[in-house]
Length: 261
Image (tube, rainbow, N blue to C red):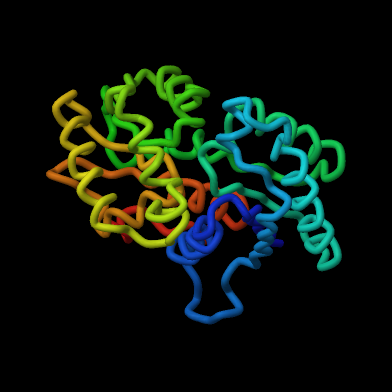
């Protein structure tokens, strides 16, 4: 029997809906609604504290435990239908060990049969499939993700070097995501100010000989309608997470990458 997929939302206004969309895009079906994988999408932003604020020490509220509790409720829904579940969290920063490990421990205790799909690990696999042989990879991310070095660790273990914009410009990139008036999270669209900033940021990474760029915050793909910029691939971890979830829930239904590119 197919596993149900649980989306632990509330970690970016558009993040959960985009993951749900990517799951559908990456699923092969017989053409009927009924052949799609069951998705339990739970979004309770009010109980999930900000990941960057926690990592920077500005709050003691670890979002890992309430997210674990939320996903546990999803497990109970799946179990009531006689299903096991696979779960994914559509947030790069959530996968910092200080957050992800308590979340995982909570679920291992309460939902031992659940399969947890790790966005960053899936993205490394996706990189190997989409652009094999990469040596230098660029990254755009929130300050919390950059400070935690979670992408540095997984990419270095995979034999790749990570490059970023200068540290003195990181606050500007972070504001483009978080600013309450014109940031992507706040307005759920891309303002001209943000678009111009990221055109410049892309150029900075290309000057450092980045061979691909990871869009390391779930709002950033809204900036780029195509999956390529000036000839280099743009890597969306959300697509990688979606493919990992489909592979876990119903492997025969994972659409080949050749059908997408």
